[in-house]
Image 1 (cartoon, rainbow, N blue to C red):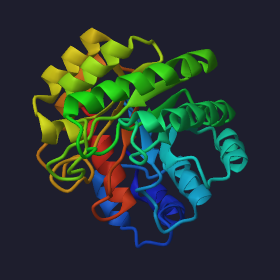
Image 2: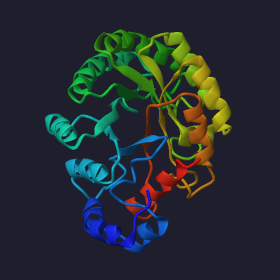
Image 3: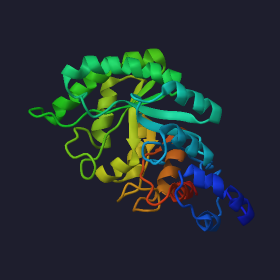
Length: 300
């Protein structure tokens, strides 16, 4: 959003506070023609800041405040355990910022082992209660790392079996479980689920409206490329529940790597996606620079 230098300088203190005391270049934002209070208010894409990876120097609740100060409509985070859920809910209501999604079941113990399915059911029940308290419609679940002695097909079948047990609970509470495939080339070597084809196969087998895919474009790019083509296939199948992004290499903001996110986000928009897009990325220098990069990716 265009802003004159006087208006920007008036908001520089706000930006500095939002970035947790990091040095913020007023010239950086003024030259880019942006107001740090409105960077998150992009015309097409609703971004959700991952507050596990942004504003790391700040206490957790202050990270949410920082995202709100920059105008972002939503945040996302990883496990709910150990977090003050009532305080988060109260703050989000006060600041009018949404929780787009959080993680209800992580890498360990693996969903791909039947012995963990009872615990998975309990975690989904608890997670749904937390999701309702946060007015959050989505919860990420992860399949798990490779299990010695099991084939990939066996692990995927076990994941299907576990999701079939969790799906009725999610349906009952009006929550959607979003299964996230990873990449094994850079970040998650030894993980049992990667790429769109096997993940869509799992979702089709579970056959529940409450189980879809957390389609992380960063992981998908590294695993298989052709982001727009695979997105179309995922949307046509009705399997995509949520999008996340980061550029590659580096897992930083758009514009720092090789992915042409303007084209990819336009494709998602043209396909009818109107949900949040999670910014699960490491700001390369400052959060201000990262927010500018994300805003620029929404231009077409």
